Image (cartoon, rainbow, N blue to C red):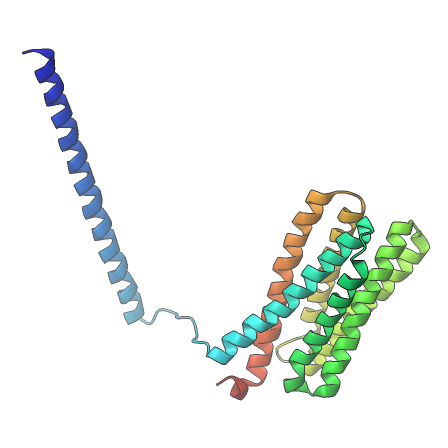
Length: 234
């Protein structure tokens, strides 16, 4: 038997084995899919837990609250970067950031009234201006002024938490809201320090943590309002 014949047989055997392996993989995959569907159906038949259905109004409110608070941290981030670098867009960035606080206050007015929305906006604007005071003192290296600014900033954070808790104490316990706000302040302060000291990669990582946390906070706020005013979301 010559080399050509042997090579041809080798190729045919390899192709046959490959086809057989491929067929086996397909059979196993289809079998696994059928078993997965059967198991899922079986779970449903035995009272497995299912996610509660959300109305379109609930989903829209949930997404809207997330958008507002994500803008809160995004524009704060841009303000920190511009402040640290001395960029000429700082005043415009701060103005947009302050507008976001108006938007957040407006978002709760349909539920808690005009005065409550305006009060939240006022508290949030103080939160932003307090952050500016912290940044200014830190950049100047004024330790005494930095300590005072940080103290006032954290007092304002507790005021925001207490305001929210008072509006919806069942769904927003004071201790929970204070913890959320403290985490937000701690993370934002760390982000600012990293940016001011030139540790840019660390600042970016910290911003990722800030964003994750604020979305969790936004979800708690939207969920709490939905639970407090269920008829508004039918």
